[in-house]
Length: 375
Image (cartoon, rainbow, N blue to C red):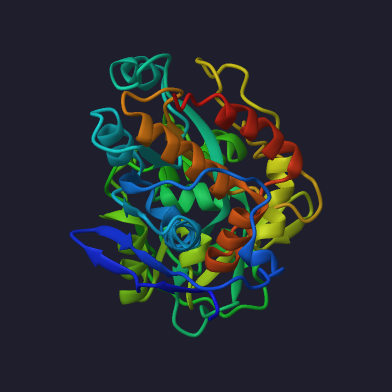
């Protein structure tokens, strides 16, 4: 009898994404050599119920990771609540979840708070999901899957600051001379919740737009322009529902909406996983990040590298170097090992269109995972 694995379908209950899988036994057969069925790092199998919460941008990737992880750990049941980066980190810091997903690196006070949750040391964050952030828009006759409008950083900043209010504004027309732009009001849609995606988007605007953007950087939307929507799905849904809207979201969720090709050097670059990876690989680590085992990328938003897309989301998983429960520690170490493995990264790329991390970055991440104490 052949070995078989039955993976149950994904179910969303009270905002939590849950997958469970059951493995059936059989006689000796040759294991598949397909790359999707093997991992480049061996770990012990784990069992039990485990939960995480956080970045909604990771949702599609996490669903695929759970299915893959439970394929080799059939006695583990893993749940993830895509509640948003801020909410996810807050929940983790109460000890209610094993890990958090966050589109923003931990703040110094959050690292300090983690002392009460971790059995020893302080929480660390490692990149697990790299994806372009798309500036999405809905404009009748102009938008659509694969269709783009050209914009530089200053134009994007002025739109989201309410200083450019019409789609046929000269600043947009000059960069899109062949597009018939309507005399229609622009409606900005932004996140209403505390969001790492917001922080990543605004980090680009602040770095690249110069004096056109004067607000302090944070995870909350800083002005009264436009309307707010909760989570990635909320932003996408709101933009889809009305003509003339524009927003920002993880590019994996852009769907049939139009997107902005961003000016880099003399070119306008549409989003892609490959273009996002170019920026990450060319960016240094943030040496100012306090705490042990942290791997935080300091993105170069002003890059002029040809073919690079500068609005990038580097999403992290937050974990402890030691847990009060040994089985939780064993799970987190195994989970992070799988997620950051070549198999895990390719799984996310297939499910969410993300950019697999480079081997150079993975080597740094593996050192942090290896530091987790399981006994």
